[in-house]
Length: 94
Image (cartoon, rainbow, N blue to C red; front, side, top):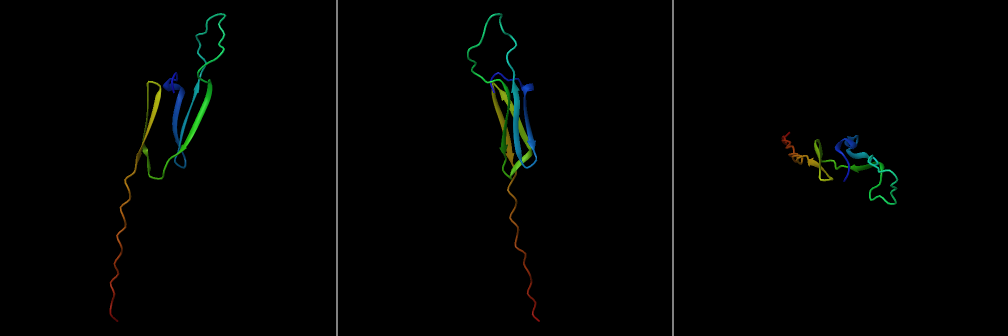
């Protein structure tokens, strides 16, 4: 995400364990008179990516950090459920 401010990007979790990363890269406002760009290295405009998270993702412990143009999203896992103990039924003699 180089060149993007944190105000221009959004990280959300939608229903059904879907992580959505969206934002908008705006054209730089500092243009000099008479200068035209023939090629720009980065595309401008809106963008959006969706990722389906696994069932064991802890949606309450999702964090996002943007440092040096790299967005890092961390999703913690829920602990595995404890196995159910078999129920013992006593056999009575009739």
